[in-house]
Length: 265
Image (cartoon, rainbow, N blue to C red; front, side):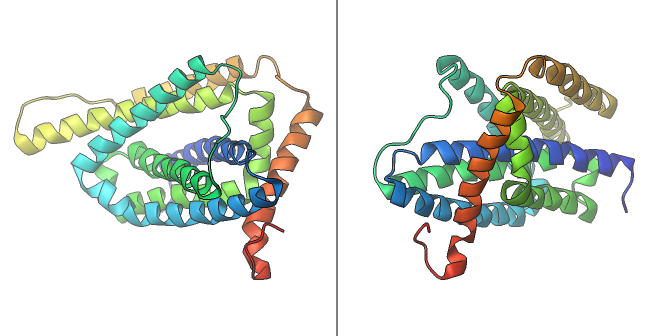
């Protein structure tokens, strides 16, 4: 049964999924450019369908991540790694944008599917971390995580144009999304330490109160959002054109198998 807390969790997942899905779409569109034009759409076709398969696998594995503390510990460490890696790469390649891949057609396809795997894991782990500990062994908790994973599928396929446009105009929103993920990783890590203490009777008592977590999420979103949107990087018209161009590429890739061929046309 829906209540205010579940609605807030789902809305938070929707925003994070939207920003990360747009980031994922931008990465895919840029990284296939070194391929010959005839192969770019074909590569995106394999990658788009690979992304859907990986996301569904992630959803199926959600119940195991919820159940076992050591998987959540790995999840907290993985999310923290992604945040740190994001800002290190941003500092090193400031203004450069996503790097184009080099190598063969299959090198590009495999590399981009590994990127998609990372985005799929992000989604599932974020959903798990947003749950209260007492919700994790319930059907409600499981379906919240599943909803987060499915939202990623829907957003990357149908609703990413809005978020692509938003990220193109205000690139720093990507940083805000990763800061939120870092805060989520901290919460998941603290809760994992507490559970380990209970299991092994270590006597450690560390907790992040729910009010503190959501206050932090709100402050990061509001303050970070205001800072990120203080000045647009490009005009609204340019952002719209860029978003539509990427959307057309991804739509063509996703619809390509419907004609019975994977030829990118």
